[in-house]
Image (cartoon, rainbow, N blue to C red; front, top):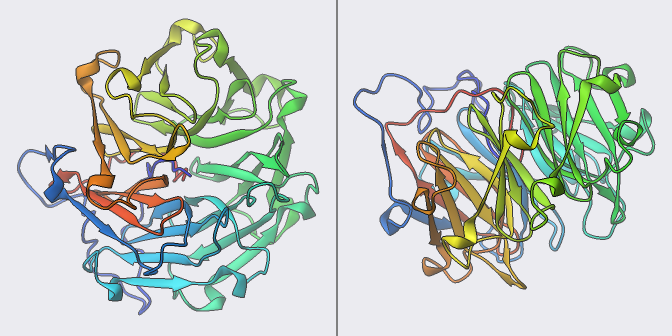
Length: 421
């Protein structure tokens, strides 16, 4: 899901399977000169479509970039699948650039993920739940400094050892020390147990993990979808909940005063369900799961998270009636991309993009492009990431991955936080 966004600055020392890593290819953040130019969203020459599995029966829900490789996690909502890894130093449409790994060889429960979080070295695969099934609680971790297809490079931890009620998550983020998992649902029942892992402690120790029931702070704080970090605060997007939540990382996670809610229906009754959070360096965007009303929070607003005046909205369907029902978002340093999944009951390919240098509430600041004109199966996405040059969109059903050449020269935004989807 996403993530949501890849807003962290990945390490440039993530080696390949041979133990050494050449200079990061497509995401080189330095050394280039000249002004940055961004591609028009509807320039078909900037788009590529590829299926690394060669079949149309794979669904992805989680993607992350580690400085060289892009990883796609299977959701198993419809079809089971392996983790796919793309080497950005190879051709996107060449099968040799892709490697697959079956996570069930590590743990039989590692079948369904709801995002990937990167902490600069390790990738954490967020345990989710296939539709209408029991939520998963086993976190899968990969050491990016070790060989991808070697089982010793992987480890798992069952959150249920710390809290048996904490399972079924969707999205996560990293604050520089802790990895957070946003509570989603278990057997279609929204759950409110957010989990935090201390990356300075042993991964396999129960004491390294903390579980907090957000319902102890706010009665309806359960069922979230997506998380983001802005340098101080962690944000959760409401899905089953009626309120977005903000956590102050400078306070103890168990302190009620560390958590602030915002009842999104006080801002708009047209949109209260969201899938994903994106941060652009100033604003937090909640990605609409149904409809197309994007809610934006100004992190510099004097009255803070709980004030209506800190928020604005925009209905993307005023730009294109086909836009909406998004699943996650991506920021490339200038534009925020909203990832289309459905339009009413049909799959959608309407990638919707907002130019953050222009007025949020003006229709001309927004643009759309229907990726199904490139390939009829290139629609219905549920995850995305940015590698410094390219934006990737992983499919929910078809097994296809769409890639957009967004900017030149390559550079990452360098924002805090890890991948949400």
